Image (cartoon, rainbow, N blue to C red; front, side, top):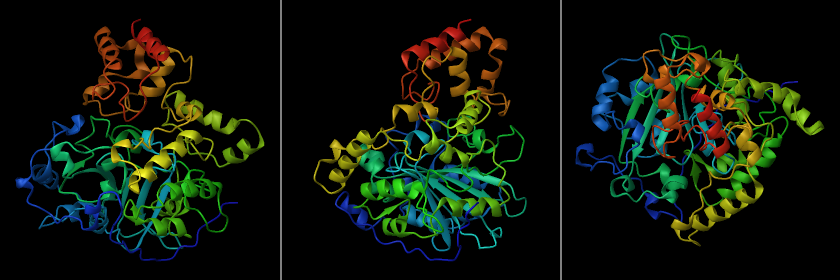
Length: 469
């Protein structure tokens, strides 16, 4: 039986941020004149061709859109977005809102997400009757990179508009952005400038929203995505109403242990996350999707998987769904267990994080809290292909998300269609072989580093052999 949450309105107050690491966080900087700022020392290579700051905002706002986020960010005077709290205010998510954290993402940021570095979604809170909110803007964020993903519903057409907001900080100008500045609470404060890109702006990059949110292909209706749309919401937390879930027992505990000395995560106070009853949960996100008419999801995670895993060594239901993603017919299905991490790596990364945040270890000693997936999870999340996979299987699994022939045919990447390898030109295959061997951080590398790990030698060789035919 599906368990439904109690839904009520709450006000979540954001405290000032104070902590041992980065004491400057105590008072966020006021907005500055963007023209006085130096250039970013190491801009994202995929966004280099696009304008930034005021030039990008003018370009964005020149094409009217009917969603509430566009109206807010294109208002005059320009809104002051100097930290995560002020972004939530601009998005009208500072008071009547809900939130959910996930320890396993199948999104653009899946390589960064676990319970100790979760993806947080902040969104409008719906009524108990699951009535569609008058306005809908939702924000997705995970620490590690200076960007936020945003979706906002057009008030007239009902279509969804997707945005990428990138932000700058002082360390971006002097080259001092280290792991601690990206993966601790520092990343949520001290923003000096921002740039907002539409889904069209980033369509030909790995930031592309439509490859997941337009599953029917170019020109079809865009949708919201949530692949665990009903109880037990195996990777979502906190989750404490009606029946406490396994995800809450396991993942909330891991999160709270790692962030015990933080003040907030994604603009939500740690105490609120730790003690949430029903204001923060996967069920709340499900309620929003139902209210938005988005209950039909492709390759949705089947709730029978949890029971099957408890009863035996594997889940036939999950294996069937995994086969769909292996064939390149859907994005990867969530992991069949709640925890995606290697326990020893998680303990090591948690200890390192706490030591740095508390000042017990130098910040340069921080171990990357994103680098902790179990070997089994890497395969089942699609970060690496199954050992021994054929070259065609490797290419199909890892490239289909962006190169399956469903995207905008006007884009350069449309020339590489992994579902039509036999009909691909020699020139295109040779170009793909070259890109498979690009350095790990190159914007030309296939698959993009945000989407998957570097191919193991055997699977890389198999993919090159397939393309050499």
